[in-house]
Image (cartoon, rainbow, N blue to C red; front, top):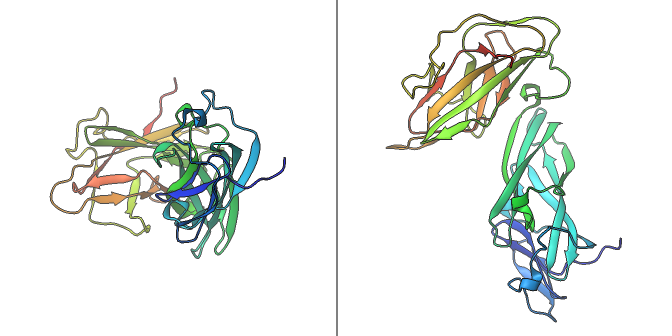
Amino acid sequence: MRTTPLSLLAVLAGVLLLSACGSEGATARSDGSQQTQGSDSADRRGDPSCSASPTGTPPTSDTSVLPGGSEGLEKDGVKISGLSGRSHNCGLYPFSAEFRVTNHETEPFTYTITFEFVSHSGGALANTKQTVPAVKPGQTVKRTLDMGELPPQASTAVGVRIAKVRSVPADEAPAPAGPCPPSGIRITSDHGDAAMGLRVVGLHLENCSTRAYQINGYPQLQLLDEGRKPVTSVEVLHGSGGISIVTGFDDPPQPVTLKPGQSASAGLMWRNTVTAGTPVNLPYVRVNAKADARPVMVTPELDLGTTGKLGVSPWKKDEVP
């Protein structure tokens, strides 16, 4: 299908936001301002005839644009370099975004990027994550974010922005799927539960090797800030440490033997209470399953407030349903 120019390109609040009517158009300059290219029709975004179809059926003609520079399009080595969609007389339905990841570190890194789908007003409708593994130092990797299967709440999305970037050394990156790591185990973290300021996140260990794996005690943790620098001002407590009462959190550790395919879990618990002082937010945690185990860096996003405490429960073998 022939490529045609976009009717209107607007960069709004750091978001690549695409909307137009008629043949009026604009291009984004590098400073975020717009240059009008023509105007034979007023902007009709408020016109009911310009609204998206109830079924979210995309229009027909394809359009490709390159974004201007803005905060929501570039962050921490990741840049949205293009947006493709299907246009109609009142705007654009995006279906994919091209982005680039550049590693400015001195060793291979794995990047996990959270993208937000946005509305005409710039509000977030939904988000999705994409991981780019093992980017070499100085390397730029190009990827495409497929937006063809948006959740229902994002059916009216007209743009995408970078919400968050997390990067970990490639040899410490979690491996939730694929070949078993050389260590013979997989360590991952879940999204956790939050209620009334209490946070509980699970750590999960799977034996993906061909031999038994033994653990006894608590995961060994190193807390890291946004720059992946160690933080020692937070006290890591074995058990709940009086943070809250959670069933099983204060059980004494027991020796655990995992046969191939079996798994175990531990928990992290904290409150995000903020009183006097500066809140502490630590995205990264380096986890050693035991003293001689290879480290894995997970991203539980510890919003510790000013409490200065993190509780950790012992490893427990997962029950088979």
